Length: 362
Image (cartoon, rainbow, N blue to C red):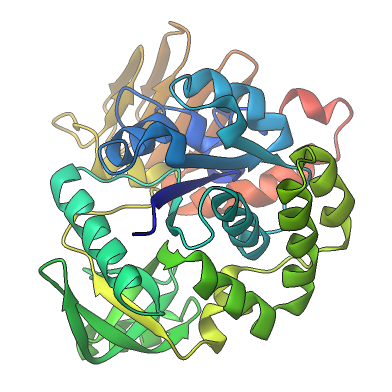
């Protein structure tokens, strides 16, 4: 029987959570929701599924030290730093090379490091079912989230007819993947009932991924074929990655593989899920006061409603007579932003990046 592996992608920037989230300590390394960093929570959810030696984390070079510090239970060699970010398709190809070194027929899950999931039992049951499906046929399994609103910030998956049952769960064929839609289109998807949010969770086997890479992403396949052969010959991984990464295309696994494949199936998730993409999202997971304010740290709101106020390092942060603000204080930066403008924080960071000594704040 093929072994099972989990590969956690932990290389994002988390820019919309500035000023807490920085390049060296982004969203997944912070306790944005809960008492533990998001990566630590993700690792805890998957530990009952596979042994520690079968868990890999792919991260960015400037985050690797912090990831190793947060994940001491994993073999250090299982925490792999990409020389530069190239989006999710190269990360999946790297994951296939890492798993193939241990089991050329291995099954592996690709999971984001920074999502909020409370129902751990249902999550683990769905992953077990996804492993069973991927082990029963040459398919690419994705887990879709049942939408509860007409969200425009997620990609969508349109499910087709029932494929089969595996692990006591029903899987469906995939008709198509759709990029982030307009509000009108998202409302139509919600009403149709056969669309799911694309959460970026996948389960498949090494042979299935390698066949898809060879067919639909030959540049990636050729680059990581060098990595696989180098690892088989006992060469160290880091120099192999430094050699191939500059020439790799920057492309998501959805564009590179999934949208072109005819063997994709989807499992509608039975667990709760939130990608917590920006500061307003934390209000869904933290207790509010009587006026709807979310307060973290030493924070006070006087005569104000629906504010998110976050104070670091014991600093007292007070808001008076204001509504619908995001106020975040860290030792070297403070953000004040209307809740409805939270998506503009990424644009703000471009301006900060042009400042002298910008590295201090990014």
